[in-house]
Image (cartoon, rainbow, N blue to C red; front, side, top):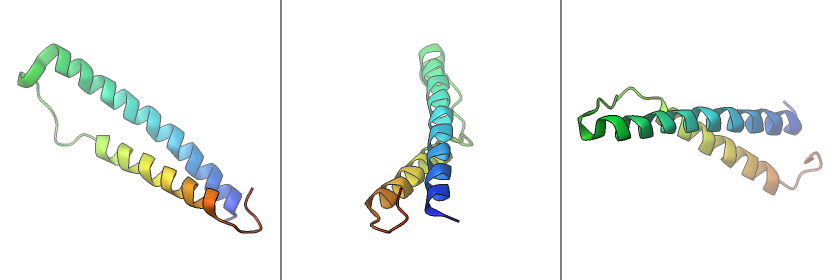
Length: 73
């Protein structure tokens, strides 16, 4: 896989998972406002997966940015 493809895939994944993370956070904020401490807060939430994917994508993009290879675009 070419460096450009990795960069493009990571950037696309970053945008996708940021949207998912934002929507999940908004749902939790609404639940907090409506239900307070008595609400049901699922232990099966995907929020950690989304946050980890965002972190991983940013890390890959950072490595590519700092990479000093000939094919770095």
